[in-house]
Image (tube, rainbow, N blue to C red; front, side):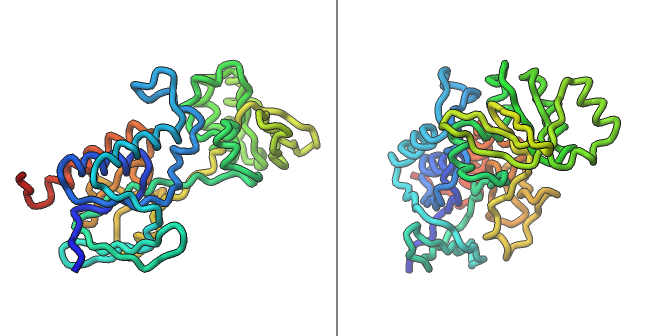
Length: 306
C-alpha cells in the first residue's frame, strides 16, 4: 500500500511553492500538483515585491521559487487535480498528468488549496499574449505607479469600471471608462466621472494592435477609434475550485474560499492560501498566507521528532 503523505499542495504558483518549501523544511512528506497556469507567470514585471529593486518578471519569479523547492525531496507533478475525495484520516487526491495519463491517486492527511483564480478575459484574440506584453493588465496596485503619463482604460460594466477608474486616478491623469452600457450610469455617476476628468467611451469592439508593442484600440459605437497604452479588464474572475464540488466548504459571496487566521477552511484538514482565498490578490499576500498555512498544517499533524 502506498504511504500516506502529510500534505498535497494543489497549485504551483507563489503560494503553492512557498507552502511546499516550508513543509519540506518541516520535514513533512509533501507533493505539489501544478497545472502550470499560475496567473503570476503572465505578469511582465513585478515592481512592488520587496527584494527585487529592478523588478522581476512573474515567470522568472515562479521559476526561481520552483528551483528552490527542487533542492528538497518534494515532487512537483505537472498535472491537474481532478477530484478530492474524503478518506479515512484524510483525503484521496485524483490527478492526471499533463500529457494524458490519468487515474492516478494519492492518499494524504492534509490538502492545501493554492489553486488560484482565472481572470475573465475580454473577447479578443491572444489575451494571454497581450497580458504578457503588458497591454492587458489586471492589478492597479501592482503596476499603477508606472502608468503616469499614459492613457489607460478600465473595461467592463460601466458602474464597476467607473469605480476602478476613480481608484486609478491615484496614478494617472488620463483614465477612461470603456463600456457598452454607459446608459446605465446615473447622473451622479456621470458627474463624478466629469469631476475626476474620467472620459466615458462607448465601445463596440476591442482590437489587437498591429505590432507587438501596441497600443490597443477601442472601436467606439460611432465608428471612431481610440488608442490606449493599457486596458484593465474589470470583468471579475473564476476561483479554480471546481474540484471541491463534493465538499460543503464555506465560500464568500464571490465564490472565494473562506479561511481563518491559520488558513483553515471549514473542512477539517483542508487549508487554502493565495488568490482563491483572498480578495487582495498580491504575490506577497499569497506568500505570507502560504507560510501561515504550512505552519498550521505542520502543527495539526502528529509530531515528527528527528
